[in-house]
Amino acid sequence: METLNAEDLAWWETHGTVQWLAPGTVIIAEGTRLDALFLLRQGEVKIRTTDQGGDPTTSSVEARLSPTLLGELSYLEGRVTVVSVIAQSRCQVVTMAYDLFEQQLKRDRSFALRFYHGVAKLLAQRLREVSLWRLEHPLRPSSMLRQALLFFAILEDRDLDTLIHLGQLRRLAAGEQLLAQGQPVLQWSLILGGQLQVTITKDGVDSIVETLGAGEILGELSLLEDLPASASVHGLQPSYILSLEKDVLWGILREQDGFARRFYQALAVVLADRMRQTLYQRGLSVEGQQGDATRLGEEEMSLERLDRMGTAATRFEWLRCRVGQFHGVRVNDFT
View 1 (tube, helix red, strand yellow):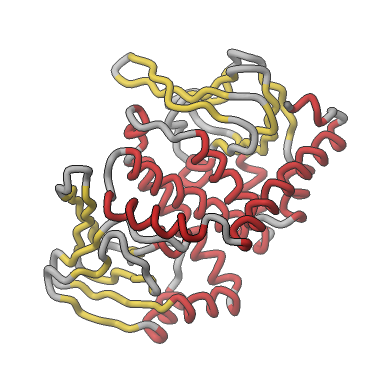
View 2 (view 1 turned 120 degrees about the vertical axis):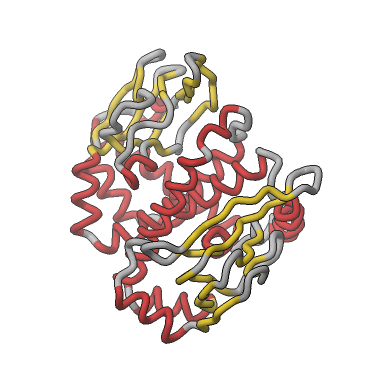
């Protein structure tokens, strides 16, 4: 969490529970619900998740120059854990209860901005590391739609106005390229209408990864890490794109703390969902997926959940109308 400063870390240690854990201690168990976040200050942990055969897959994470956050997916989404985290060496861990942490986010908006920015960058890095998994396990359309709604559920109307007034409307023809794998990404883009196709080239072979539609965002990983495009994207049919130059968007994020906090929070939630779906569709986190399915089944028709998704869908339609008015394009042209 390179975005946290010394004052932030001091707050964690003052208000959290600092513990030294012996090797083999289970910090997080896959498929369970958490009520706290964890900050790995020293030591090394193993990340373990089960596959469909019940066998564990293991990697390791070490706290080096900066502390490492653990349990962020469950916190951002309010869902069960997708991995187990086990102390591999003697570890110093700070445990922070959700209720105390949320009070701090509300009390100190600058702290919230640094936290959501750091989590978004952390998840972007992890998604980069597993990006080639999508060759064999592309996201389903329903998952992509949910991610779009998650993004718009967090932004406010004034945030959308900012995107509209500073963005550029572009009509992408069928077959026209928007992003080229390995090339710089100069813009952050939002699809207003149409369909785009994502392909990844590996060993000289092009593979179709997924098809994107209205509401999807592009260029978010490069925005967070300033790295080349991990895939190529071109129009599958005539499409309309709202794009912001990265330099312009970076300027807004530096100057407008409120917008930046909500924007990074929205990106973090979307990336957390994308990471979870990547694990599930790769056949990993079986215990997490089973626990998730049970919980989501219980909450599927909750009024709060339906209201949040309904608000997000309405907000996106409102944005399309505003873009059409601002740029002199009929909304029907987007579909």
